[in-house]
Image (cartoon, rainbow, N blue to C red):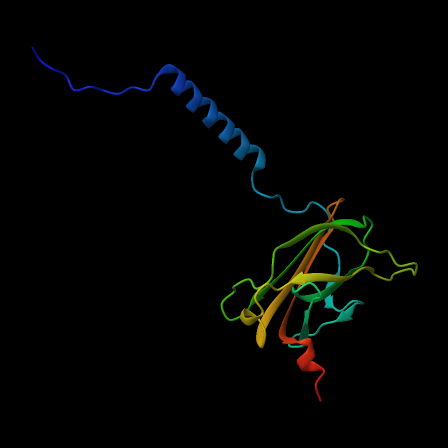
Length: 174
C-alpha cells in the first residue's frame, strides 16, 4: 500500500469567495485609479498669510499662533484671479525644507472663494487655519508653505513660498 501525501485543496466555496474578493478589489482599484490632472485652465494664484490676505515673499517670517483650544496654527490666506467657479477643493501643507518632512496636519477641504465686487480683483480665501501639531519640529526653521485649489470647473492653481516659522509671541517682543 502506497500512501500519497495529502494535498490540501481549498473548497469550492473558499475559491468562489477568493475570486469574488479579487474581482471586487480589481474593480475598486480600476475605478479609483490615479487622480487625473485638472482639465481646466491654470489661473494666477497666490498664497499669503494672515486673517486678511497679506502677501508673502520668499524668506519672510510667518507667525505660529497658540490657539485657544491648545492647538498651534498658521493663518493662511490665498487669492485667485479670473476664477469663474468659486467652489473649490483647497489643499495646504507645510514641510521643512531641510528634509521635506511634513510639519502640518493634512488639509484638504471644499470651500468657496469670496468674489470681489471690483472688476479684475482677485477672489479671496482668508484666515484659514493650518494646524502644526508639533511646534518643536517646525519653529525656528525654514519651511515650505504650499497651497493649491481646483474649482468644480477644473480651474486650478498652486503656489509655494519658503518662509521662516516663528512663534507669534516672540515676534511681538521688543
